[in-house]
Image (cartoon, rainbow, N blue to C red; front, side):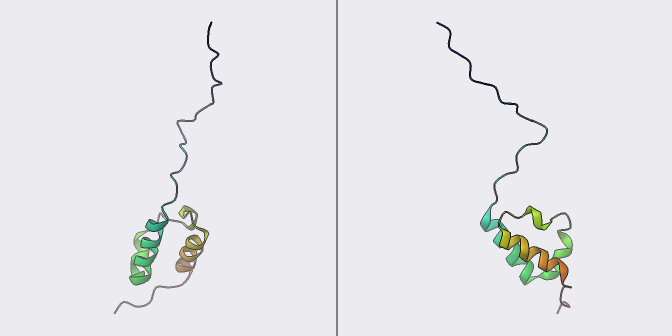
Length: 72
């Protein structure tokens, strides 16, 4: 007797699902940027929407709105 085939789901290979957020990596990046805010200029491709934690997203957005302090 033939086994029924499971239903096929359409899988889009063009747009893979984003990887899960890595909480500790987000914390490390934000901590580094708080210690050396002039480096924020180097992460131009990063946006608040890239963060998985809403608090991290809000902090990053706030960091983008205020000017970096003068380097010592």
